[in-house]
Length: 422
Ligand code: UD1
Image (cartoon, rainbow, N blue to C red):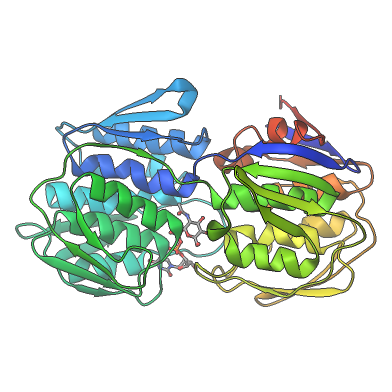
């Protein structure tokens, strides 16, 4: 398994191109199942999670082609389409569950393995199941698989979500485009990736109103057509690279970044004393001098501070001047980066869902282990600020969500290299 070796201390200067959003692309790809016409995604990120979704769709009978070095994904699901999503692929990634809604909408039945993904909590599927049941699906769990069927197709319904789950909102949104009648999703997730999915579905002919708000209304149509759609910027990759100069010092322009994607996060950087400026090409982030100030952070669904940036923010706060509190409200087990940061000399105390971080003057390089996607990159960020060498092991998690991280950070002056595993 590859590792990443980082030598800390370098100031960062230059620009980093931000890729298309992994989480948007993973929701957009299953939309191919809703039409027999071609669906083409531009600005796709080149990540192993995208390869996993490609394999899953191919296993169902879709044609999926990666073009222009992976930047373009051309898909076609003319049929026949299998309705069984096998455990062997689904276990690699939780987002595989996003084929459930489209398969039900297209074929009226589906068998989808319960997913795997990052080990950051229980992550059940009850919200998806209850929502699709409200639309007339009958769903039971047998041998680790969800067996879903409908009598004569899905029907539009009022679908209140007990929590604004991103995946459940996406599954219902896709399912409802072809359902009979009107579906109203209440307490819908408001993430930019939902807006992006709705925008692509609308290009395909779906009738959707309210994406980005808590209530989304979908008027079912008989069929959807093809479309070409550019994936929205990855706000999590954006936030991660905004933290690089914040942690190391210097000035980095994140190309393609927009403030509206990361407002709550940028507000916390501002509070910590980091300057964030919108430019014609993206967001310019600079740390002028001195230590950053301690800040308190609470993760929340969008537009709040994203849970997917909590680990990286902790890396910054480890060297802040004072005591910060990080409250994780979305996942119950998402502080696995903390023990690794302790190995680097950080002072972090976890009590339930809250981490208390007492800033230290300087972190020290150490061998550390990546435990999930965002944890891996937080350790790289910490390594960039640390004295000496940090070796981040088990970086396959990283490759699920960050393309060419060593090249992107290397280009702005970071001392970072990938060491191939044996
Ligand atoms: C998506 C993102 C992930 C991000 C998360 C929260 C993708 C591919 N992944 O994941 O990076 O961290 O949103 O912003 O877009 N839950 C239930 N029952 C359910 C569904 C969810 O209890 O049926 C719980 C989960 O266990 C978790 C919380 O709700 O504690 C949030 O989950 P959800 O919003 O569904 O996240 P995902 O769509 O899996």
